Image 1 (spheres, helix red, strand yellow):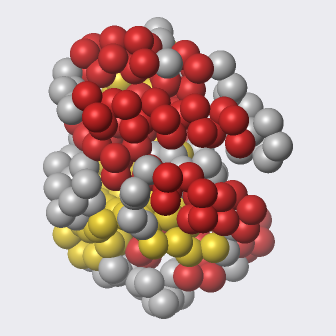
Image 2 (cartoon, helix red, strand yellow; image 1 turned 180 degrees about the horizontal axis):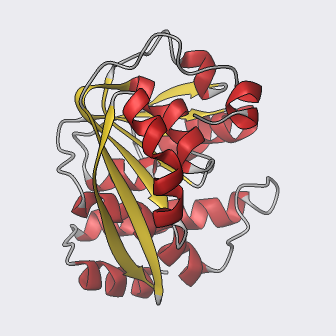
Length: 231
């Protein structure tokens, strides 16, 4: 895992302190170990964890400067991309959101304390926290939670005006972006660019959406409504 991580960081043009790299490996190993008793990820080989979880998360360091920013990781799952980003940028003010209580308890009570990582935890559905945490974050990031039109409705309400939503996507990013163009506009966003990164021979994409206006108060809608009739 360490070799794969180090080689991948070099290809991405990222230079991290040796202790940070060691902590990233420790976190990756902790995910693999916990996955033996809890369903955290289908990716369990050390080199694949390094590429598809750690390096994929760290691509966001190439997209925006995160020092001192507040970041919400929506649908964090086993802690990606939020935890690797916090390890790499200690000044990042991290909040993790996920609906699965067991995963969040593991992150809060075991994994992050062992790494001396501080974060806030929101356990529940994103749409249920949207009013109490509305327009609060500099950056909201999410990977593979839903298609982009639905994901924008879940995530953009959390971003303050002038902040950014970073949607981590794969090969279908361009198609999803076309589908989501109306949603982005309605929710107060403006598509800025798509960044592409080669990780392990596979292109990973980050869709960068700038929050230029306040999100109308009626969004996000209930989950069933979002899925039934995307914006």
